[in-house]
Image (cartoon, rainbow, N blue to C red; front, side, top):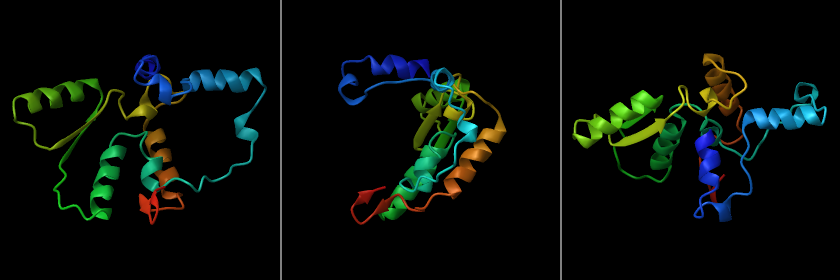
Length: 151
């Protein structure tokens, strides 16, 4: 989480990002304005696919890459190695450097469970992954692309 805030300061990133805040900072902003988000009416976003909604959890990006390969009819056997936590990332990279990795795509999530398990999150635990998957299943779009490109 704090790494993302540091990336924001890089000259190569600055032109593309307006601001970066943590979930804790967002909650503080809501609190300072007396906004209780639990009392607001829910509205379903209809502009993101299932795959766009599950990026925050471990394995979400690998699922999206697999779907993109299928949708684009690219004949490639994806063998993702999903790293859940910093130690798993270290092990996968070590195996890759020794050419013994059982996979051809590494997706490393420093935080256990993915971003939903990160230090900047307000809640933690398996419940969050389940909620992310449920949110993904509610997506209006089930594919990554439409006639004009990505959703």
